[in-house]
Each structure stands twice: as C-alpha cells, then as structure tokens.
Length: 237
Ligand code: UDP
View 1 (spheres, rainbow, N blue to C red):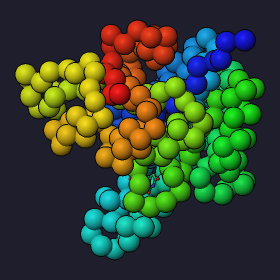
View 2 (tube, protein in one colour):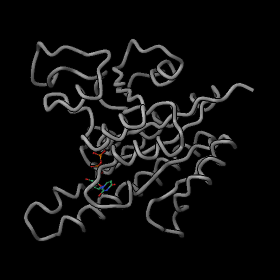
View 3 (cartoon, rainbow, N blue to C red):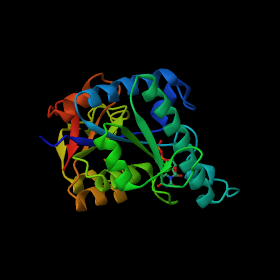
View 4 (cartoon, rainbow, N blue to C red):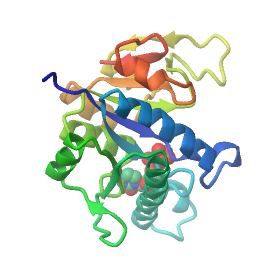
C-alpha cells in the first residue's frame, strides 16, 4: 500500500477571531473544519497546531511587569488549549474523529502528548490537535508546530495565514512588495521576511522539513498544495 501523506497545519490564534480581533468566531472554525475534512477524505493524515494570540500572548501579558513573563507564557499555552478544544468540536461537528493532545497534562480535558499514541491516531484516520505549545515558556506555537511536525514525521508543515505567501517586505505596508515562491531557510530568517521565528526555522532546516506558507481563507488551497500544486503559496526548503 502506498504510504499516506502526513502534514502538520499551523493556524494562528488570531485567525480564529475573525473581524472581532479577539475570541473565537465559530463560522471561521467551521470553514477550517471543512477544509481539514477535505484533506482527510483524500487520504491525508493531518496534525494541527493552533496559536493562542486571539486570547493572550505571554509578551503582551507581561508588558507592564505585573505578570511575570513565564506566567504570561503559561497563560498563552492555556489559550492554545481553549482554541484546540473549540477546533476539536468544529471538526467533530463535520463528522471527523479528533483527539487533542496537550504538552501539559490536563487529563479532564484532553490526552497528554505521546508521540506513539499520536501515530496510532493517524493510522486510524483521526486528526490530532497538538495543544499547549511545547509546554515551555519562551517558545512560540510556530516552534511547537515545527517540533511536532518533525516528531510525527510530517512531509511538510503548512503555515496557514491571512496572506498568500512570503513577500520580500510587508505587503500591507509596501505596494512594491514581491512574492517569493521559493526561498531558502537562510533567506526565511532575514529580518525583513520573518516567515516564522528563528528557532522554528532552524529546527525545520536541521531536519529538512519544508515550510509552506499559504492563505487559509482560499477554499481548496490546502488540498491543492499537498497534492503538489504550489502556485498559490510560498515554500521554504
Ligand atoms: N507559548 C509558550 N510556549 C510555547 C508556545 C506558546 O510560552 O511553546 C505562549 C506564548 O506566550 C505565546 C502564546 O503561548 O505568546 C500564544 O502562542 P503564539 O503567540 O505562538 O500564538 P499565535 O501568534 O500563533 O496566535
């Protein structure tokens, strides 16, 4: 039997908040759930990481010095669990089998991350959502997503964003920003580009994990990319 493709899709927490800028917009959850469902029905094994920026980020929480950065980061990790449980519901709503695995033990809410157990879920065509980041402060969910992608042996990590790829400068600020369809890990670490934080890019580079950046709101795009059509994205490799 041909080996099934396995991917890790990373969504930012902010993307879930829609126009509100905070909280969770269930119509966006539903949109994402339908997109992920189409991957699973095409025989793709899917792991998901969701950020927590729609609820809280450690750096912002600790800005005025009242909350310590480490506590702020744990609050951020808890925010990713809230988003993951919401995503689990949306995926179940469209008929998928899903498990949330947290890097921090929370047995009343979800499973604890165990890579072998995650592998078994994939074999049984279940989606696995990896919550609570890496379980450590001073990291990001991009790093957590890269780490999990490597641990589960994913073929690629897809960073699903609001833009259609990587630009040589911020396309929201510069009209002459050029899209880069393919770039090296080194270029991706350039200050003007910053696809993800340096820790996650370095981890991807060391393990030859391709990073794809695409627009999450373009229907059918994730499936096209995984099936090899890279027109509507950028790839770091
Ligand atoms: N976080 C952390 N360790 C991790 C992952 C996340 O401390 O391994 C915290 C950190 O405070 C971060 C917050 O969780 O700001 C939310 O994650 P992130 O900012 O990556 O979310 P996104 O920007 O993708 O919504």
